[in-house]
Image (cartoon, rainbow, N blue to C red):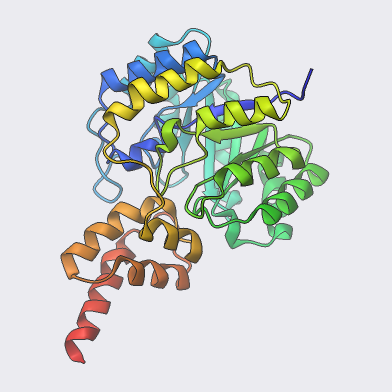
Length: 337
């Protein structure tokens, strides 16, 4: 029997970015039912920016996330629902309400150098009986030594799994291998990996992570996620089966929910466009894509110029207000020339 892997599907959370946070209850029910039938162990449901993310800054949800979590839980008896929570956005009440709605896992997400802000959230998650994950975002922005330091903080707070999160889709396979290998050597909890496909490397990076020791891997159906999307869930099932790993996910059922449910409500194919490619190249947070496109149209400037400047500034999640400011500055400079 091959090595066991846990696939965690993020269609109903990361896909919220691409859907402009407009998932309907029926869409969530249909996807949850399909994922449950396919045997996916965990899948995530929340606003793209986590619990409490529905706001003017990040975009309002069409349907209250607690209602969506409840709907997902009702549709799947074998799978468990995960939620994402970012300290500073999601609160204690948000997490407690998510548990009441049926969530069984919490992934506490911070910037790769800010694990210390997650102590209370991780401790609360454990106290609530949730499978608790430390989620280090924008992992390309810190050297491996810093990543290890931050992971050890997560572990000391009680995290059971620690994720290397390539939020910008900027990492290369050898970099993923280095980071995962180092974490396996330095922490005792399980390791996970979350990829974005902005450089067309999501699948290659996920393979590199698994070969280096990651046992939890994220994917989204039809790649529905921020930027150019994530590692494609149904493709992962096929690839890791070919590689001799055991995921317990039925390939045909995963393909069916991807093609017969998700494909029908996707606003656009998850292609690697000029903008999403630049996001990976410049190391820009994948959820900035739609905000950048809007600013580009409003101020009449090239999306790529905005993204390159964001990369130079090392902008991170929560700094969406910089996007319009940069676009405005570029437009003003042109007027002065």
